[in-house]
Structures are given as structure tokens and as C-alpha cells.
Length: 65
Image (cartoon, rainbow, N blue to C red; front, side, top):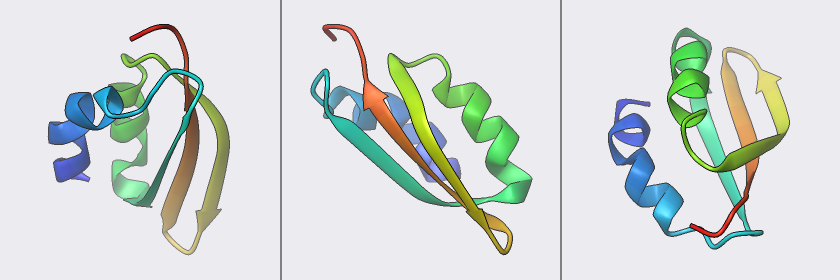
């Protein structure tokens, strides 16, 4: 999760507006921090899957950046 948080801006820049970003392997211990950090990006969370201590999220990029 630390890597995703540190590289979040670069990762999001690689996604075109209207396209999707899937992120998985987020531990429940890091889940809230991850969601708070990624809330600053132009992404809409479409789906969250949780299972046995881990989460996966599907985002869609919004806007023109």
C-alpha cells in the first residue's frame, strides 16, 4: 500500500479520462488511509470488493486531466 500511496499521482496520470483503474491487494489495516489519499484524485469509485483481510477497488477517471 505504501508504494501505491507514494506513486498515486503518477499512476492516476497514466489513466485517461473516462478509463478505469483497478487497484487490489489493499489490506484492511491500510484501507481507510488508501481511500482518503486517493480521494484527492479525479477518480470515482465504482466498486469495492472485500475478502479475507484484503480489498480491491475499481475507479473511473473523471475530468480532463
